Image (cartoon, rainbow, N blue to C red; front, side):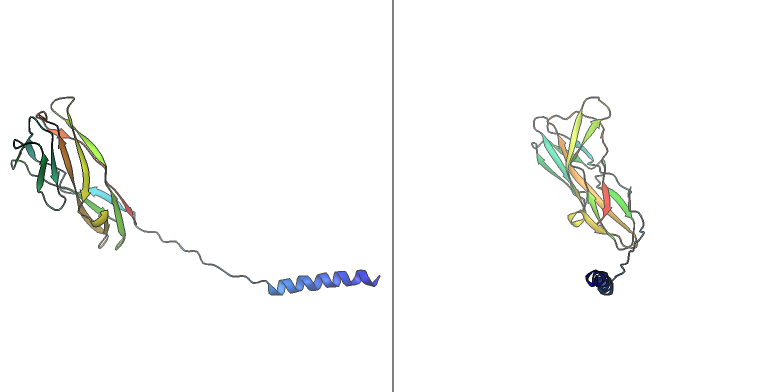
Length: 173
């Protein structure tokens, strides 16, 4: 009978030892609510200006986001770019959390439709921004950047006013 009394005593001692060696640590949980980031259209739109295309060869007009300078490539000597209409990069304004960094995602391409004659289009490709690596910092909770691209004209592109829209997405890094 002595054997059976020692088993419960050993069990109680074992539980007491385990309880003496158990430790509890308390973690901390935090959260920060920051201002939502937003992007609005600025004072200028992406405007390639006025031009007359080469009748026999496709051409491209590239607008840089740093200045309204257009570089023409392709086409023949008969492509003309006129100063009668301003050339501008599109401006976008960003607001959000002070000193936060943000990234910009630009479209791959868009289509411009002829507003005067149905069925005629041009594409805009190679979008670029004035930001280094499409990333910026909000100073006092705000920033602005510019977007430009390349306009692709077909040989003998029909006369008319062309228009299209594009999306620019901003997000916190």
